[in-house]
Length: 375
Image (cartoon, rainbow, N blue to C red; front, side):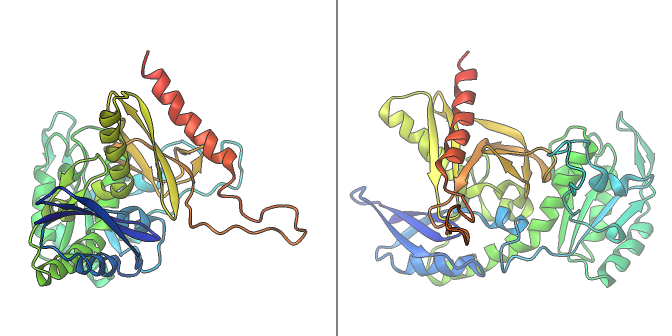
C-alpha cells in the first residue's frame, strides 16, 4: 500500500508517492483545475497504479478564496454580535495603516456588509458574569431576516465570550436550525481578548466554511469511488487535521500549502545536520521563504490574509487579521509561472515580479529573523 502526499497549487498539483513495500519515493505532476481543485487531485490519484492507504493533502483553497480566485466566490455571511456599536468593530478595526501618508488609502472591504451585521441584546462582563442572557426569540427573528437576504453562513462574536461562551452557545443552537454553517468565536478563536481580531478570525472562518466544506465533500466522494477512505489535511501550523476539523475550523487551512514546504525544509535540515536554515518554496504563482531554527519552523500566532506584501512581509492593516497559529512565511517573489512584458518603449518591464531585488530583500528579511533569534 502507498501513502500519497498532494500539494494543490495555483498552477500545478503535485503528488509524492511513498511505496509501502520497498520505501521507494516518486512523484507526478498535473495541471491544477482552479474552478474545481479536486478534479486535478482525483485525476492524479487515478494515475497511481498501486493501492493507496491514505492521502495527505495540502491546499491553497483558503487563501485563494480571500484573494479572489476565479470559481471561489466569497459567500454571503452574516455577523451576530453584542448590542452597543459592536457591529462596526470589523470595519473600524485598528489604526494600523499600511501607507501612513497615503491620503487615498482604502481599508480592506469588510467581508460582512453593514446590513448583514445584527446586534443582539446580550452582555457578558469581563469577569465572565452574565449581565444579560440572550433571548432566543430575538436571535430567531434576526436569523429569519438573514436567511431571507440570502445568507448561507453566520459568524457569532459576543463580548467576553472567551471567558464565558454560554450566550454564544445558546445563539449557535438557534442559528443551526436555519443555517448549515455557524462559526462561534468561542470555538474558533483563541480564548483571549482583543475584540477586533477575535471577530475578524470568526468572520474569516465563516467565509471559508461553505467553500471548504463543499470542496472536502466532493473530494471525499471521489476518494470513496477510488477505494481510498482515509485522508488528512495540512494546517497552517504545520500539523495534520482530519476532514471534520477542517470543516469546523477552515481558518487554520489558509496557509496549508506553503506550510507543507516549511515542514519539508525543517525535516531536510535534520537530514543534512544543519540547525538553522532558510526554507525556499517556489510555486507557479508565488514563492515563499521560512525560517527554520533548531530544525523547527518559526510560528506566529497572528496573521493577515488578503493583504499587501512589502519586502516579503505582510503589511499590517492591509488585510484581515486571523488569530491562529501559522508557520511564519515571507512572500519573496511571484512564482515561476509568472508572465512579464516590456512597455511600449521597449525599455522597462511592464510587470517585474521576478526581478531578483525583491526576492533578495525578502530572503534578507528571513535571514535577519534567523540571526536575531540566535542571540
